[in-house]
Structure formats: structure tokens, C-alpha cells
Image 1 (cartoon, one colour):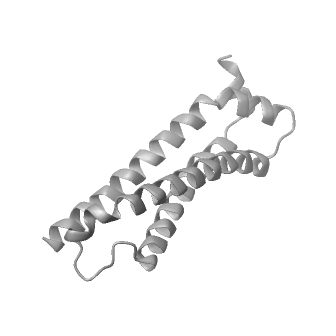
Image 2 (image 1 turned 135 degrees about the vertical axis):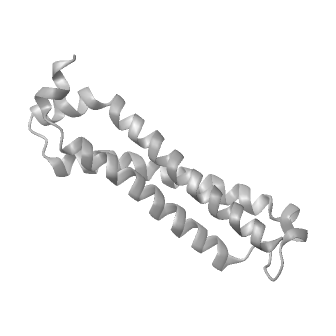
Length: 127
């Protein structure tokens, strides 16, 4: 049972990673014209990456706070299924927040870097 639960936990992390990357990549693609205008007006690559990562950081912070609160509320329900862990184990919660935070930042950085490399004229051509 523990092996099966661990497998599904890893699968959930993989699905969350792919989903988070897809949503952020789609959001950056929707803002292609805005990014092209900013670059045409003089914004450098660092400013573009910083703008996108600031938005990703805000969404990630809100998601982690809400997710942690819901996990702590649902800990009583999962108490009977945990073996060798307390329902509100601080180390487990900290590791989960760190892993999801790192995955979220990486999923935001890759599309941000790709958006910063685009040519402003190519982005504005389809306007």
C-alpha cells in the first residue's frame, strides 16, 4: 500500500509539473504582443524575465498558502492512512513546499527565458 501511494504521489507531482508548465507557457504566449511592445520600447531581457517571474512568484505564493491550509485541514481525514508520520508533520510540509516551489519557479523560468529571446518585430508582426 505504501509503495502504491508513493507511486501515485510521484505521478501527482509529475502531472502538477507538466500542468504548471503548460499554464505558464500558455500565459506567456498570450502576452507575446505585450512583451514585444515592451522590448521595442527598450526593456531588456532581464526586465522581461523579471516581470514574468514576479507574476509566477505571486501565483505560486498564493497557491502554496491555500494548498498548505487545505492540506492541514484535511490532515485529520488522512490520519488513518499514514504510517510512521504524524498528520501535521512539519518536515514533510516543508519538503513539499520546497519541491513545489522549485518546480513552480523552474516552470516559470523556462517560458520567461524563451519570451525574452523573441524578436520584438516578430511579436508585433501579427498585431
